[in-house]
Image (cartoon, rainbow, N blue to C red; front, side, top):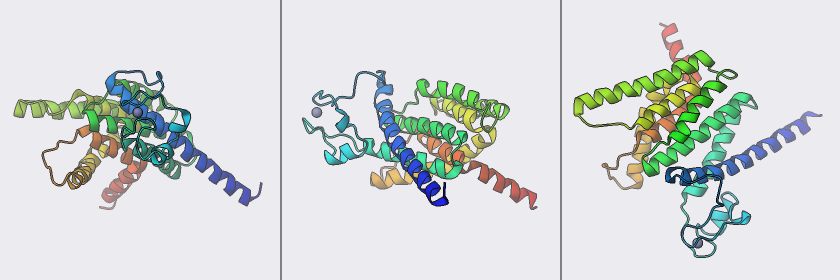
Length: 265
Ligand SMILES: [Zn+2]
């Protein structure tokens, strides 16, 4: 094949990846809606909460259906949350950025799967202040198993899972002794353990540092959108999800840069 054809094949593959991202985002919407409510994510088919109208395939085309129907049910015009197209576009973006950073590789596939779990945790924690065990516990197991074949490797992953759990447990204990109040749910511990299982102990530390950055950014965004309501408490899982995604994509470069600072002294 000539170079021209190869370039075309590559872009076709990227377009395919974007399409798969939109479809996975559509599935994540189902997970985000149903998992906190304890219903199956497989059956029954999606229906309008207003009138029970069962969605046909043409009502389920990512982004497009929502846009064409003006964000409303086809039958009863009940508004459909803008969360649906946002999650679909976000998931597509996560797929494409991972291709950009990791290229076509097994690591890309693993980190995309990790990113999808983070998107679901982000949205569920934002809406319900809940980080379901059904995502975090299998996530820890899957992260550890996959670390045998992709970075960071099994030892780093095991240390990462332990460190993630222990750090937040210690913070929670300290906070409890100091203030007598529960400051953090157990879901956060399991979530950071899952992050450690996928990324290793170094990137757990990077995630913790970045979570204060993403916390301020997301906090400012929410305050701006809500016109200055400072009392609205954002759940920590949303910061962790955003920080872990960043750590997954650029964490290794941040660690290398940080190590370089000290090597230069
Ligand atoms: Zn309806």
